[in-house]
Image (cartoon, rainbow, N blue to C red; front, side):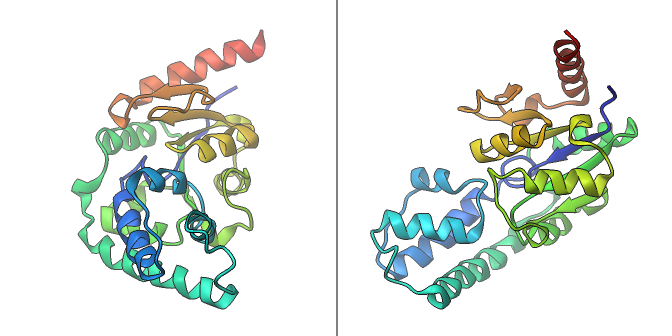
Length: 225
């Protein structure tokens, strides 16, 4: 079976906006009397804005202290702070190896997709100057269920007109790897603690077209056997 598409997560794979998310969430949490640190912020990787807010409220014992309109207002405030911080992103904010692997995939005539639960995905790609590198972008506006549900990766594959079995997904979060696996794609995990990924790499520095094709070939042999 040929590899026809590679689908990337955004935060932590293409660029690292985790710290920007943390600063915005910390500011909102402080306003309502909840303290969070960067260790706790790791739990928010790969999940939607509202799911992140609910985890913060549970963390602070205030899950029932705010009604739905108030929760929406808190999430909107966080997003406004985060969007303002995106002005700091440039092409230099791409993680190591990402410009090269995107170019290599394009040169191999394999399709590239994005699967991000961020509603700001398109703006981030524009700020990074790589919006033309992707054939299709699936973001939170296109789905009902967040990761670890596979919907966003299935949506990306549908937008790329490939079957999930013909694609690799790349993630840095446990929920994202779980979503890729559930979609029926081959999974690549970037970073520690992702041993449920088909291939685990320490950083994007190890990510290359050769790495992906070698992994694909090895998985294809396993499936045949």
